[in-house]
Length: 44
Image 1 (cartoon, rainbow, N blue to C red):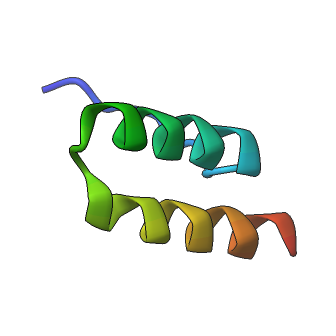
Image 2 (cartoon, helix red, strand yellow):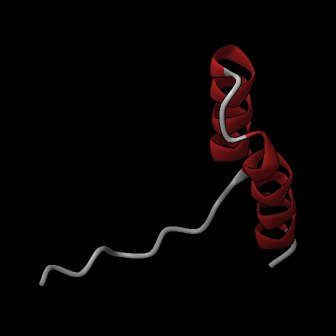
Image 3 (cartoon, helix red, strand yellow):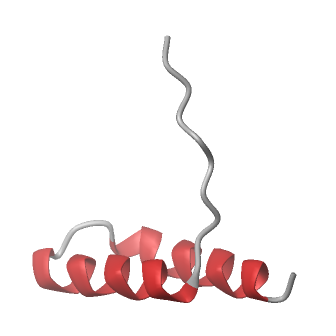
């Protein structure tokens, strides 16, 4: 089994996820979690 390296969510990633979710109408619940994670990671 291959391991996938972890990458911290940043504001650019969160923005991209939110834009795609808005365009497709999918992953609406993930938008808030992505933004929260990006905010938390930027404070480090």
